Length: 279
Image: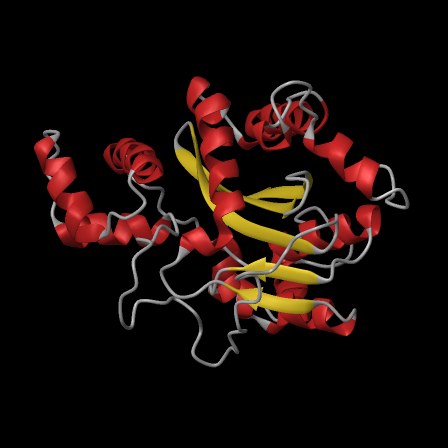
């Protein structure tokens, strides 16, 4: 939001108007060392295959693969990547204690139509010299990707933008399910949905399988797209993911919809939601 070449307002005044410390504007965050970036790639691939690995087991695994790491380092990198083992464990949620967590509503619920349940999550995407966070909104019934967004920071803002776009293009869901991450329990994320009458549902702590269809989506995106390529920049990552999600929605038959004449996610979404807006 700062315009260095603004003809009337110097940077100092712009920072004052935004309530931003001038030092924050000039601060350049230290990038992760290349060694850590390579290790994060290995951790992410391992986690896809073994989501039950916490920092202890991940450390043991990495050491057996020849990596010289300690648990403190692995734990920090897993937290940076927003990875958490799926088993139940006490006092491990990264939910802000001041934020409300909502009850999980999907257990034994029959999902029979589009826009009945949407789900969302964040995952890690490696690029040259760094990494990004990918957020996606999926329709639980059709498996269609309704909106997505990339960011280089793990805040609620880019998630909110994607949700707003999904609602503008596809309508309002009845239930919205996420995990208990601080982005999703924040008022910035929850209040606009509650104002629209959406019921909020949140996974149990350490239970990513409560949001199983999003977890399966991440496996597909990473094995079929991200890990086949080495993105050089955020722009390249965005361009390639845009093409992949278009292919996933409109051309790639989904195994959940039969084998004889399988349909794509968006074909199912449009067929059973005739009043949905065009994606």
